[in-house]
Length: 638
Image 1 (tube, rainbow, N blue to C red):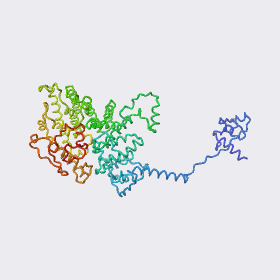
Image 2 (tube, one colour):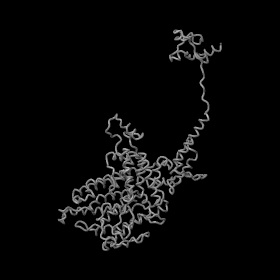
Image 3 (cartoon, rainbow, N blue to C red):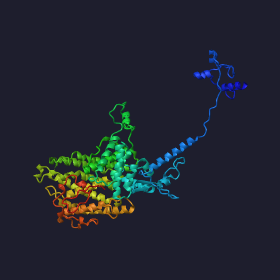
Image 4 (cartoon, rainbow, N blue to C red):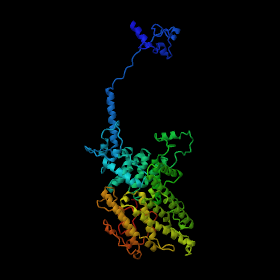
């Protein structure tokens, strides 16, 4: 009995019997009210609390019970922990796979060599990654399909080449220097593989398989799964920029361009995130999230610098394709794109942002020429008259283009590729004048100033071609394989526009003979072909990607072969009296010696008889047999 009284007292006063707070009685605890004890009854086992005494209830305090301590992990918990670890390892292993087939990674060396990228990588002793992760990254196997697989060391080397050599020429998709190959693959497998395909040496058959794989990948993720992400847009931009696309042979190039346009629109990259016409408390955000399977509503979310580079890169690419190839619609310029340029310059995250902004703004100035030029392909010959207002507009744009180009910082102005862009865009201003004619009122007066206004513009077009060839020859031959499609498309424009200009029929305001003496077109093509030949030998020796004419080991460079072919075709169209005295006989390619064509094999077909799609196709497509009566229809891309 004494024991019960002692426990009852301890439950009220605490185990030490001191001034601990008394516990509530059973009645007050059940009703969840405060239990008050009289001062004289605190510690007395026979005393009742004030409420129970007033209500004449039987008052007792339940005995205190100790809480059960949690024991060690059970066997089931241990098994669950092991299963979680196995699932994590399988998920990481799937990230390292490039196809559904699991590759067998090579055995790591006993003393792996530490690369500079690994030395700069911070170490974390508490990381849950297995020991030797750096060794596994270098020895892992990335496999896209049979015939195109890379080791971790190769992927790291190719990524370094892209970041240091290719990315400065197309600075719209930046892979940070701190990102390694494994992290890039984990973040975006498609971006990883198009980057590897832009650098790794591969045959023409492998290149075609890469295009086929990318079509399937984009169709599955964009069309079937309705995915919309910045990584998909960057993948399309890099693939179109660094692939040898024959725009009039491969129709998927146009499809990729339109898919990239849809990504820009769906991601709202071409508009300011703050612009909207809905009310502040609209349900548009919730509706968007529900209809797009949980995708967050992007209204009001500021665009990152990577997103701004991507939209500017798409504008630059679509403008080049629309302006030069007459293919597809371009992204219209607006005030927000100008703000994106200002943001990149203010942030100064990468030095290449200055070059990217310079290309975009120079392209924007050149695009305005389409606003006052007559439309092509309409058959309306009344609009193809060269009038003084058109000359004033072209002169105004030329002056603005000159001021912008000569106001660039040293990082941009010392880049010969930038000046090649500049001279190519200047030539694009004057290129439509070739197919125009002077007004009938002026053609009757041989001394009219309007007659020679067209002559002056055509001569400036010829001078811009000579300046372009000079800028291109100033580029080191080792840099030519690193140029994207946008730069090489300008070479196609200059080559074909120059041939049209030098083969233009004699009229009151133009004579081709002095123009041919001013610009030795055949010699210029020969020098550029030699540069591409040197670049191809360097790429073959350095283990870089080549662009061969045929899928054979000793096949010549595609651009060398086609430039020399155009040179022979041009020489076959002009008379011997118009040739410069130092001009040598046309060289024949070692691959096809029968390609040395003569004038009678072409008949009476001239470039002016071709439609507007002829000149961008000149460098693409198969070389025709010499018995064809018309020039070949070839596309262009480098």
